[in-house]
Each structure stands twice: as structure tokens, then as C-alpha cells.
Image (cartoon, rainbow, N blue to C red):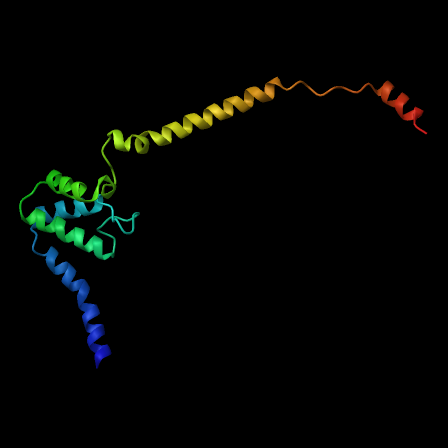
Length: 146
């Protein structure tokens, strides 16, 4: 009997999560979907909060929904979450001094790779060619050996 109740409770959990979303009208629903796609799950780190099953992601989804219902703009909601969790919660963090390496890092790595390739190619051009062997001298040396 307990197993049956537990299974019924587990089956009802997804229905409870979607019941909250039903409180949004069509415009709010599209904003909610867009925001939850743009916010990173702090537990999963490579998933957005819309796709994550982590409890923290569910809490963030509820916060986003509550703020949409409260009439806050997308910018206000994003600012609230970044003030609370930092820029890491955003998939596209803003360009500022703290995130400078994040934005310029890939370009710097490409430039470093090009500089290394150029250095190694220049170094290989400076290596003197191998000495050539005179066949007559080689034959004379081989004949002299006992």
C-alpha cells in the first residue's frame, strides 16, 4: 500500500510543476520560456534551468515565474538573479572587466597558437642542411677498414 502511495505521489510531481505554469497568460508564458532558456542551472552548469531537474533549478524557475507575475521586466529579473548568484547564472555574461578573459580568451589562444606555429616554422628554416657524403670518400673509408 505504501509503495502504491509513493508511486502515485511521484507521478503527481510533474503535474504539480506544470500546474504553476498554467497561471501565466500567453505573453507571460513566452517570456518565462525565453528567460528559463537563457539562465544556467548552477548545479548542472551545462544545462539551462528549463531543462534541469535539480531542486535549485526548480527554485529558480519558481522565482522567475513569481517575478513575471509580479510585473517585473526581463532586465529586472535578470539583474535580481545576477545580484544573487553572479554572472555565472547567465549563458551570455556581460562584457566587463571581470569577464574580460572569458570573452577574449578564445582569441588570445588562437593568437598564441599562431605565434607558436610561426616560431617553430622560422626555427626549422634556420637549421643548416645535413652534410652531404662524397661517395668516393665513403668508398675510401670503407676500403681502409680491416
